[in-house]
Length: 327
Ligand code: UFG
Image (cartoon, rainbow, N blue to C red; front, side, top):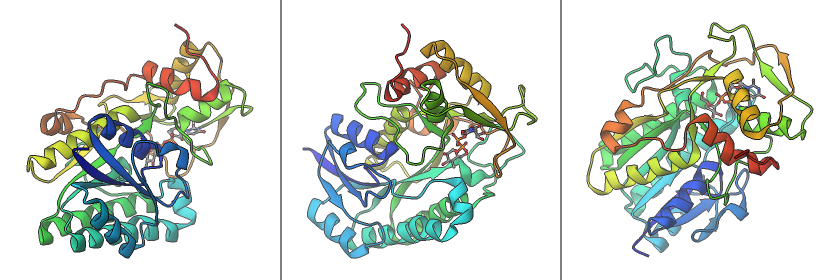
């Protein structure tokens, strides 16, 4: 292979899709994952190292052994609700974990990092769309730990010459368009997989959390971005760093928001199955509307989503729930 990239959390949902794309670009992904939420069977495009992000010594050994040209840092805990009841897990894995990796990179001389951040760092903004200058005021421990980690990455950048791109994902969804990888979370809490589970009658119904928001149809609005597009943004971010393009923090979204009811209508249209729903009270911590200003990712990386229309998202995700997409 031409070169290698270390992929922490590469057995997870977004990490495994990115590992596959790296391989297709002739870069070997070296996956480092402790498999607490990742799947061993999703690591198929390069070597696998079973290790914990908090194990700095091990990370240094792996960097020295494989000599990667960059690290993409996905390994983290990522449930907003869980972060409220178990903040220690989030401060350990997301803050201490990132610090451990930064120290390993510094000691082993690895100077390029692409960091998985989240639009959860912006909290519940009053001005939309969310751009990179929107104040970052997270409203839950998950968002706070991602923001702290962004700050650590930037400070190591300034002090030690680490070059980085922080990517703030909006709502990751969909599955590998070639059918090799899907979304497997346990427990599954995200809207689109749960709605598909309800359409396939694997759960009795979807609970819709709140129908009384100040949005066009009363349900929450989100910016859904396909995981294959997210994966490509990481490859573009690596090329940017490899060309000494300078440090960046970027939103990754489409610039368009869709309500829960719009998502459900697309599922009915694409699969031909209805989605049984039960209306439920609001879920705590949910902002009514979030969508990105996608301009900076376009201007700095040339990033344009290709798979992130709702129909393609549902078409690629549906087969993993035993549903056929109608032609
Ligand atoms: N929702 C339901 N019923 C469900 C699941 C979700 O009504 O069974 C609603 C939620 O209340 C929300 C919307 O669907 O209004 C989307 O919910 P998700 O859980 O799919 O996604 P979130 O927007 O809550 O969270 C996602 C990521 C987080 C990230 C966050 C940033 O999962 O990691 O986006 O906003 F921090």
